[in-house]
Length: 423
Image (cartoon, rainbow, N blue to C red; front, top):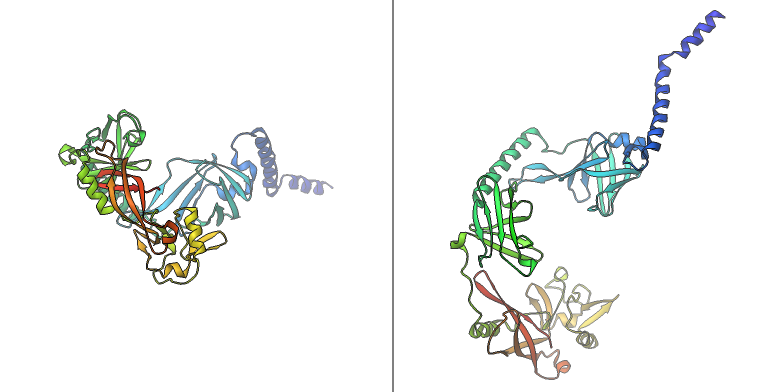
């Protein structure tokens, strides 16, 4: 009996049994911590197995567009994302995101991304083991493992660092100095010590204000790794546009700056009636959406003369005109989509014009200025003759006089014109 008791005592203290007891204690503690941590970002609380498999290593992922990414998930509820990108000399390097991104494990199959730039804000997990991770985010799917891609080596990283340093130094030499707009109202200056100043004297439209407001910005500049871009104080980014020219974009407008006043084009004088009339004569009959119905660029084939839907109508003159062309067999409608028929495509008025094919409806001739003084180049009243083609003679009936407006702008040392053609 004593011998039996000793064996029982030994089994009670068997070290092989201790891990189970420790695991039970850890599980109980985990449940307690998760219960107390409700409302905080304990990523491991949602699913401990998912958390163990996900966290603590680099995942190298290839997406369904053959892009390569690196994801690293940490225990503090954040992950980082980097992209395997090529330098101008085609060396590969990791281009990391600016900040760590928050996440929460909702379930073994779903990770919530705490960043509004992700839409939808979820990683949908398909498989997750210590060696493999497959998931989807929106329409992009990823296959991941722990094997770095070819090119992710110390030697390559050293070569990239050298190329980046050379690019930054080249960019610093290029951008250093003062840059001004043609009207001298806006300027940017970059100094050898990395400081910068942007000044704007523009009032009125924010769309043409270099700093998005009137005033001065001072700060440090940051040059892109390739040396072809720079920003000042994180406010405005400039790109190289020529040997003595840089540019930046605000909304839909591009603003040019030149290296010192000597390289800036001279301010343009007033638009004269003679220049305006000459430009009207030269450009009045250019293809526009109002004298040609255009088709989408991607579906045009110069050899396509068949009656199909490969030449969908992308612009409209007016609903009555479209209905007229449908009734006369130049347009057919299939599932709500209008497309040119073989009759239209075989017409001599169907041709490739100004970057897209189209069916010309009329010719514009004999433009006339309806003003004796141009006060606003953006809004110049004009008149011209609308001459229908053989296709549209029965629609228009005769030559019509059309009153409209022409908009003139001065760009890169020359005037350009756009006609807002309306009947």
